[in-house]
Length: 324
Image (cartoon, rainbow, N blue to C red):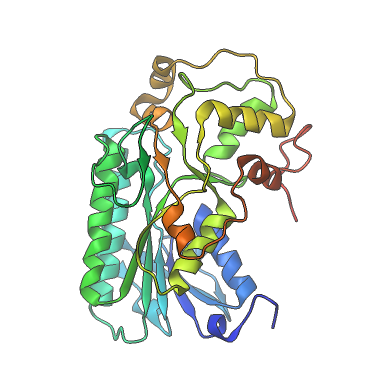
């Protein structure tokens, strides 16, 4: 038994949807370190793995198909599934972004309604801070009731409505509203870091828009912390120190030891390149982490520079990710 393993973890078995994604993969790594058994659902039969403590099962939420064996021995559930929002928002892809979230939760709900749920004690579901209105001045807590007037605000509203429907099963239910995830394995950071590493970085617009970010390891630990906590409800999955877009670009350049000399990129330019999806680059949400901290969660990476240093090795000369 390792230092991270204890009898509490060893008695857990978590069913994860979205286990092969950016955040899900990090959660799976933590589960393996802690000796927690994992069942996971995937829409790709080629990604099904069968190991003693890690078992994959097929599902197709678009047609409400799910392998009911996935619930065998499960004591808790983490649901992360949903199509990436970081692709051009064509009318067809917008439908996919929304349906991928709604259909997965409805499929999960219909399956839960058919099984013995007595051993399942908690569900933790991913959501997003995109529900909060675009603002340069507001500081958002989980108590905020206003919703962003955008496609993303609509998606998260519908997403959370489906999550809340799981309350009918009388299982402890929590939502984590995720901010900008810092990882060198995917997501936004590598796309931001690459031009900066080659001396071509620049802030977007005025650069004053707030970026509420979180290191991927802190986020993965947060999911397991909330799962194992006696607390429930909504929690913001962000670090204690949001920064402006201009500051974030400067900190990335600092880690890579590269100069910033290009002018900021105007919003109309990015809208021409990315279409409506460019909204993601200019939306501003300054979000509080106070609630999760008050439950006892401790961030390993509260500072953006420390987080970036952890993610990149030899950053002054290459984009090679850390391997240790």
